[in-house]
Image (cartoon, rainbow, N blue to C red; front, side):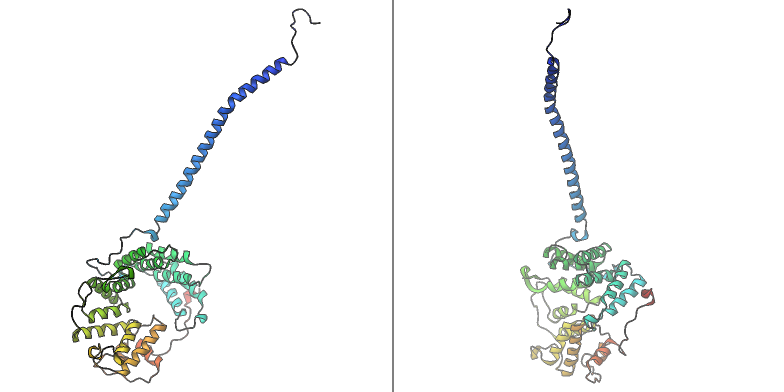
Length: 387
């Protein structure tokens, strides 16, 4: 029995009441906790999304800043004028040691040697050494070696990076190469519009290859954009003349055609060939041969032996001996486009000069036109490259 003053309670009742109260308070807090958790998750999501977007945006900006994505004016085949620039005045200076390495690599990569006999490991090594010193020709040659799979695993990506590095140095030929990459889908998504924009930029900077190509494309007798040619004779002539002025022989072939057949600006033949225009075309083709124009040599070989129109032939008279010599030089240039014939006028002068004696040996004629007195010895490594 309970004592006086004590109240009678059921055991556990107070504990149950307390537990219920806590459950109620916990139940009231859960929605708030969920809201806080959801809020934190939302903040984390937004922060991560912002960071991801920032990364993507920065990557996009970095990609757009690459030389391959340079914003250039669209190609204008009907531009009113063209200003001749000389590439040699635009390129960075070449280090003397880099030039030694570059020339040694070129001698080892001799087109006259069988491909399997060339030491491409050494060629790549020397070219890379020169390229690392910002020898711009070596940089572009190394890119070609990568594309030819001469130094696996280097390939398109590394070749593209080299060309872009040369573009940053302001090398006109690098812009010409980038145009070729866009046309042939090399390292970039193929885009003919961009290709022509880069070629136009290269020509404006002074690259003779780009000038010759665009000059050829704009020397037609009418416009046919779908076929890639247009008629803009004044600008085409200036481009071809500027390319030939810089020693780029292939420009002579189309230029001779324009000089031999006077054209109106819209491409139409304005007047028949005259003795003066024929003589100018003939000397242009002959000069092209000395600068390595294979098509020029072939054309002159045909003209001296079997011209298309005897009544309107380019040469003053038929001459099988001259035709044979031009054919030999044409075949040599087909095998090795790097050949040049500075002594051409001594072994194959234009009429009315007489031909010098020739024993019929093809290599003798080629060497005489090159100015070589004896066969070159096996190329040797320089002391610097051996170190």
